[in-house]
Image (tube, rainbow, N blue to C red; front, side, top):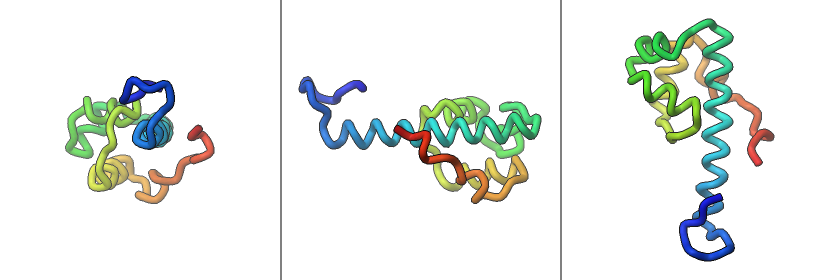
Length: 94
């Protein structure tokens, strides 16, 4: 974990950022699994959701904290219920 300060111990904000990264990565992994199980490419998903293809990749890698609106667009493009897209194993988060 990269610390925001020069300290050897993480700050509260460091811990929040670390946990959020794990959450984003777990969501991205879940999204990728759904997309691939439906045989949809990142390009097709991006086109159908009207978002940049680079954004799909960044979401799947857990690099960005996307909006609920974008998640809704993705769920519509994948033809899955929004709640199914948001239902992933939180136990994978350290």
